[in-house]
Length: 357
Image 1 (cartoon, rainbow, N blue to C red):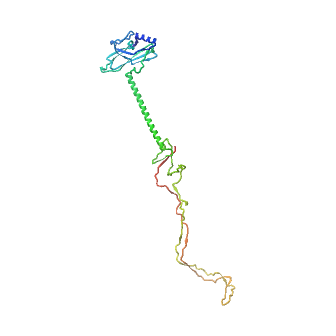
Image 2 (cartoon, rainbow, N blue to C red):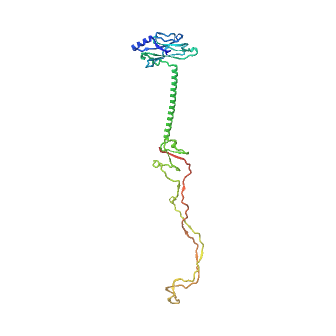
Image 3 (cartoon, rainbow, N blue to C red):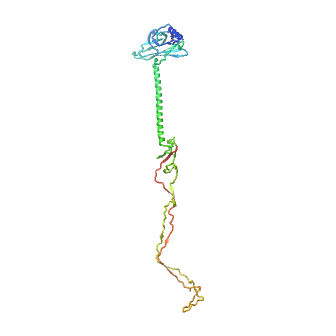
């Protein structure tokens, strides 16, 4: 099946390409022209020196290698919306002197004119096989190359996507950086305010190990009061004391308690002994072998020999006690039971934690 559309070198184009190969100077293809073919689809001929009916000519937008291995180049021209009002069926490539180097036929298309109410950019591409791509001077100057509408749109979309990605990345990175900076600043401030050894009180059930997981806290102990340690820190965290105490004798004041008293006054009383039976008393001079003292008195007793008195009948004696009183001394009964008692003052209980690391 023969190809309906094709692009070929003209005789002048082949001649100039051969000369470029011999001289080592690349052939410069600079312009492209399009025409309507006189109203019919033409067949390209190497003998052509121009288009059948040229309608528009402009510098190439780009000339690049399309396939290095197959020695195929691609020439591109962009037609602006202001150009148009004709059909496009043929195209040709020219050098800087205006010599026609290649011709091609194209699928029929109408290029509207902006004044007709419908304008558009239109890109014309010619793929041309040459003997060596090195013999053709490519357009590589970015100031010369114009982007097609589709390329602009694609580039715009790509740029927008890229910009969106960059903005999103920057936003995320900025947000993360700000978050990190704020977090670091807060952490540094917190560390400065809460060094190891800090004590915190809470009026709720709070565990700083959970609230500040980068630090370590220990509970100072239950049901304990706080007492200031020595200034040199030698007894910090030492414990002691008790909520309950028992008074010992040594805890009492060092004083003596005098205890004195007297019985109630007794009135004068007369006491009568109990009745005794008939009896006598010993220890008196005996009557045996009495001594004679002489004179009118006769001594009937012998002091040398003790004896007893004559028996006395039953009788009782009466003793009189004068008014009097007695001094006393002694000990009281135990005044208590020796039980311990609380010395805890009125208070409010709080949780107390100490940072240790």
